[in-house]
Image (cartoon, rainbow, N blue to C red):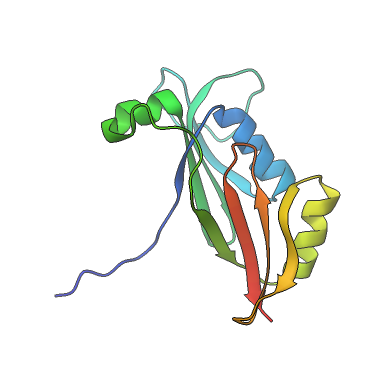
Length: 142
């Protein structure tokens, strides 16, 4: 029987989990799914200012994103100990109403690193940089 791939969820190393959750919920329109406070093995669903978190998950539509603090990442995945935050990759998301999303992000002051355009391969897309330096692309068929 062939192995079935079901879902891919980015799990990004970040400096400050709480700050990242705020960026994704307030600027990008994601909803908080869960948080794990530092030194606890419990999940919470409400972000508390000035509280330290080691892990969080946010969701928008069918897209899930996970965030883990650098120290927690090094503990969970020792191969990444000493790795720097950021990546030489983009996270590319198919969306509906890309023009509306682009306008919304601009109004909220999100850093646009590539303006909305139509590509030769038939996608209408743009790219942003999040609060940790990760680059996300958003696109729909032109």
